[in-house]
Image 1 (spheres, rainbow, N blue to C red):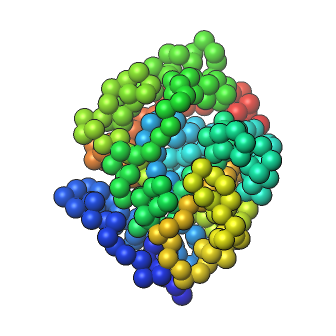
Image 2: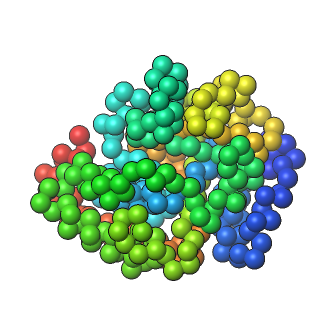
Length: 302
């Protein structure tokens, strides 16, 4: 707390925010993120994850988490939900080991096993790099295109014990609901958002005692940045965080507990941003009709 909000430390420059000029909605979103930092900077380290096409997947994760585990989805999307995918990589040290022994040779942080558990993040609202400037990528977001998003959605529903015969119809209904509320679902075979601004930003607060367990300092594409390790020491300092990436193991065991991880999300598209809470309520209702059945709820929780 003595160092103040993370994004302002080390005499951080505000020049990255110039790209938001002329966009009152984006400026308002970033102002709210800054307020969150000021409020929580004492006990929590903060990270920023930019995304676009994965938004629907994250929203479904959040709704499933709400139905099954009372996750507070009105505040945030949820990047991962399938606990079994973390069996071999439950934390940052195991991800670092896996990266050094396996992933660094093939696809690095684009390796499917890395993607299942890991998030690429920046450490400041005012970040300038490497590779990504949070303010600059907010409008379009960041995403990989080398996968079938529709397939990911259907696999997710099936993994959450939606009966196989109902998966395709439910996926269609989820996509239609997304279109109704202005979420860009072009990668799922649906419509784009009207504004053309498909970016989203997830603000992730992690309790300081969990930072080394869930995070590591990274170079672009995931190699460990030894100069900033242990990352907790760096995060507790008064240095500037404008340059420097990290990777987070987004284990739902922690991410669904508000006393360990807290998240807030913003969408570059003003319509979906405004509609998101109602969208979540309707999505929860839609998924709850199936997942709310006691026998399925019990299956999905184990």
